[in-house]
Length: 325
Image 1 (cartoon, helix red, strand yellow):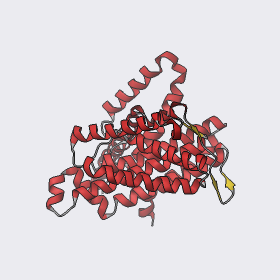
Image 2 (cartoon, rainbow, N blue to C red):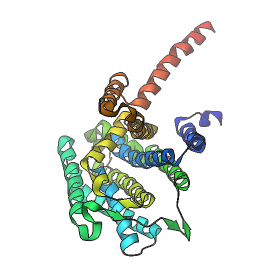
Image 3 (cartoon, one colour):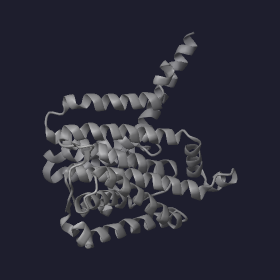
């Protein structure tokens, strides 16, 4: 029992749940709750994106497009057509999954920088459609979104949304960990190591890449829908290429092929700009210096590098105990 609790999966989930449960003790006002909610939404996207980039080895520079489709889909269905918010979220998620499936089949035949350019193009197309179809999306001015309600209960206030997003983040991490430890997850890791080798042992590379692409798009869509209902307004700013790069950076910063690394990357890179606001004109310089320093001294990302450092320090201690015995 103790060994299971100490495992990275169970112990990590319990640690994350404990942090989410105790964090409100340190959140003194609604601004800090707002930042925490933004961290949770980014972390949900990053957990899905890490499955695609970190485990399957497939780059995506257009994932903000799926986030934006989730946000605008829920906003349009709920605000313009009067759909119940939950039904709008579910319908939008299904539509985004179908779009990712249709688009992913030809795109994922590409590799390397060709795949990166294709996903970048997809993100730009989504951004242009959202920005120009002002009849439905409001164009650059954006669109108002009705509050999220379930069975007559309206989710309002930062404190309520904090617990909702926290619970969904735990669910996203749990789903990600279960997928990784399943036969499908082992197949994804094999694809990352060698796509040819994976196919030799009977793994359908195309189907597995498409599956994880759809799953990561669903994570982004759900987070986008929640973000739209939480903020009450959505604009094309969250669909830009820059937002896609921010999401990829969070995954790489926290550590590729590390679910908890994706969460840590979202936490650090979402909160760091808030903490560096005191530097005013030098904020971006300090931010860049932090990024460079982290990649130099923690080249595998924060979580994998620290985990490796910890394991290396434990080995000499274990050897000393064995020698003394």
